[in-house]
Image (cartoon, rainbow, N blue to C red; front, side, top):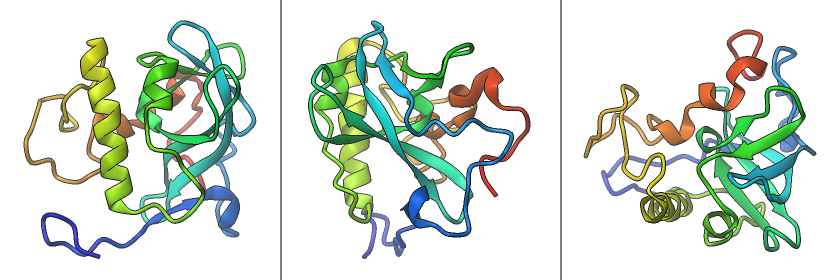
Length: 175
């Protein structure tokens, strides 16, 4: 498969559960099974799975199983749009509400194509733009808007430092 830029796209993403030689680092909490709440404190569901980049050894998405309040089915949430509560085992979507999450393409556990990721990110950016919140435009790692980012994951949506915050003991999400 080729991307719009003509580069070959190789699916580097996988469910952590499906990878025998990967696990969450001892220094990071394993958030699978944790409740997910939106910016208003409404429970949307729970983290079902971590979607990891095998090459970069980083979590890229949380696979969230929505409950009755948050809709139904599964949605992927980019790691940079979520944060861990400092005290409780809860994942907070500080810049999103239930409608933002449910309006995104569903996730069905099949391999994730770049086309799916682009649709997903377009949906999140459209929601952010409507709500006037974080990351309505693509940014480079310094936070400056850019039309030509260095790479798909060089974006604040994938900045794991905002996710782990003070709950990360050291650098390195998995081993």
